Amino acid sequence: MRATWYFDLISPYAYLHLRQFDRLPAGLEVEYVPVLFAGLLKAHGHKGPAEIPEKRRHTYRNCVWLAHQHGIALRFPPAHPFNPLHALRLLVAAGATPDHVDAAFSAIWERGEDINAPASLAALAARLGVADPQAALAAPAVKAALAANTERAIARGVYGVPTFEVGGELFWGADSLDMMRAFIADPALFGQGEYARVDCLPAAAMRKEA
Image (cartoon, rainbow, N blue to C red; front, side):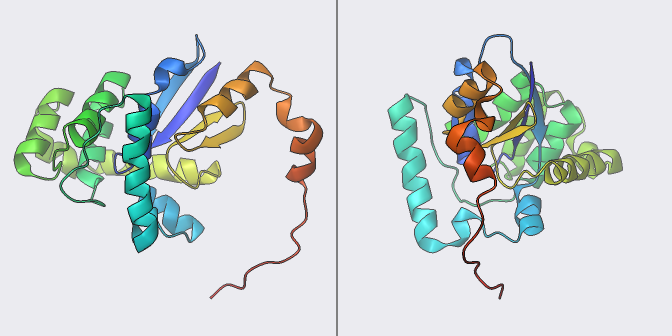
């Protein structure tokens, strides 16, 4: 079975998700697709968690707590949110292989590097095998590929990162692996019982748009 993993390097939850991939079902083939989280937010009219002060505080604490719970090394970068664009473009230029994705997340979320500092960006380019990082960052094909990835995610209904797409279903969040595993084990799961009922549950009230 194949699955698509949509992610942005800006997300600590994506890093925590990645570090649990040893729990993925055996034989699952994963396509890694870097996207711009900001593009997803814009498409769906959302605010990011870091744009709401109390949610930002909770999010950071939650990530530190989850890392401790799962035994995952985590060190936040010097500032967050940060602009992930250059690091994402390097990843696209190099090819988003498992090793390359791991190297990028490790730099930002394990070692806590400022990925936009010239030395850190150059070091990441070297780890990814990008010989001319400035040319890669400016390449129209690289820019277009990242934009296309983001549009592809939006077209699939992806609204946040990290998100797995498997069997036509979306599984969002670092805590969604068990639910995804249950679906892979039983692809008819969501067509049964209360799952089926809530899929067509009517809304009794809707908040007015500003």
